[in-house]
Length: 349
Image 1 (cartoon, one colour):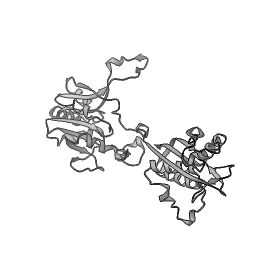
Image 2 (cartoon, one colour):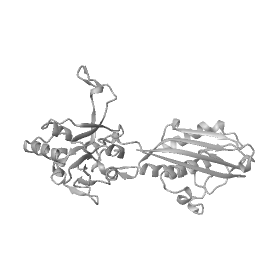
Image 3 (spheres, one colour):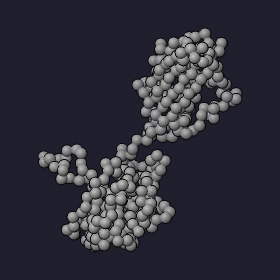
């Protein structure tokens, strides 16, 4: 059976989370779980003191990466073994599949940037950026690590360096993937986005103010609703809720609740905005469309953008509001209703 040592025992000091960084979630999955999935067909020697998944051989973490690997090698029984840092969560199966049958190997990529050492420019064609997995014959790795351990040389930063310090073996370089980055600080995390969309329509009636985008628009009719009927703000608020999978406005503000009768929709949007912040997301941008035959919206769009930007504490440049007619079609086209839709992109803070 194929074997792999998964290293998950680091303290993640530079990540500055106050806990093992591998417990941080990316797209709803903990960082270490990506490596468990990638190596699910392998016998896994899992090195960690605070993460203990099922179906693995649990190994005590060492004070350094070297000591963690050393501890794991004491119990590995297979002839070949891979060693992988769980912080490299984006390792691909197509790369892993190339990693066996070599006495010694490591995954790496060629540098793209120009690299200098002092005043000397290094030849990029001769350089490799080492990644993991690394590994090879278990016997070779065990012997090299044992020699280093006895000499108290425990500060090696990768496995190939340990072996090359004692044996003249040319390692096989397996070209990997530039996406196989190591999560060291929070700046290394991929951007997480969520998209939300909503559409809202309200009937125009007499004896109601026309409030849209948080501003009062002079017109002989206004939008009917349990609240002030602001279809644009409703669409934005519900798009945020949709992106966060928190339901719809009807769930939060049912139209049979007398306490919210006539509520200012700006209050609703601010409430939803606070829920978004609590969920750990920020607004990347918003794109809206107003559907109305009358009145013409163009004179009021800038004020709407300013008002919504103020409520959401974002730059006005992140809010797009457009308006169009319904070409005299349906109730909107007949001037009996106004609708709005909003699409929002959220990004993990």
